[in-house]
Image 1 (tube, rainbow, N blue to C red):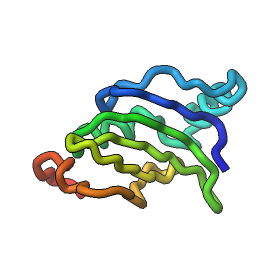
Image 2 (spheres, rainbow, N blue to C red):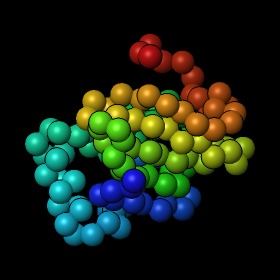
Image 3 (cartoon, rainbow, N blue to C red):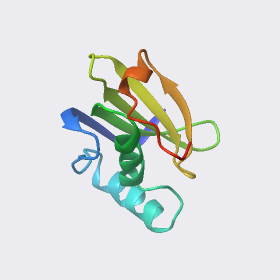
Image 4 (cartoon, rainbow, N blue to C red):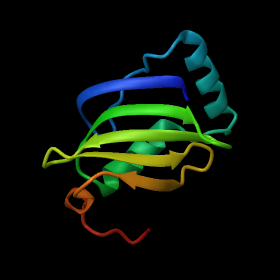
Length: 113
């Protein structure tokens, strides 16, 4: 079940996400959770992605997983492939990548995993 906030973004480079389109109450709840340190700010995850992958963000949503919140970030790759990156919203840990030709999107190697 998707909750809190859903963004539909068209042709935006990674790291450039406008204010969400969720309700005022959803945005308020989300802002409070970020301020309290309960979830990682979306901007941190977008910065992480931009440093490691080429593409354009086309969708971001925050949903309830089985026991935690999950950020799903959809990216359109340079060859037109759609890839979804799944992050634990509490820790910011990447725990899933769904899509094809993900290696084509990777930037040069970095020292961290």
